[in-house]
Length: 79
Image (cartoon, rainbow, N blue to C red; front, top):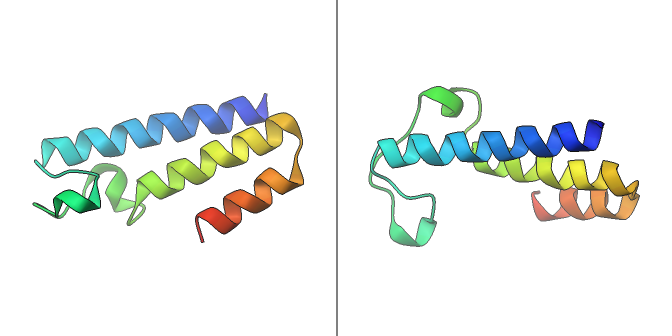
């Protein structure tokens, strides 16, 4: 249950961050360049909430399958 909650929160955070970026007419893809600086909504709490969301999703999967190695790879991927 905890794993599913972490995954759900991660997907909701990712979705919200992308909507805020779209509202500011900028892209989450760094290759497209930055058009505006987002500093409100979920960006008030984290400089990059999309990375936080990814970490939550990875951690949720680690909890779901009870794997220390998945958790370790999540830490390595997002560090």
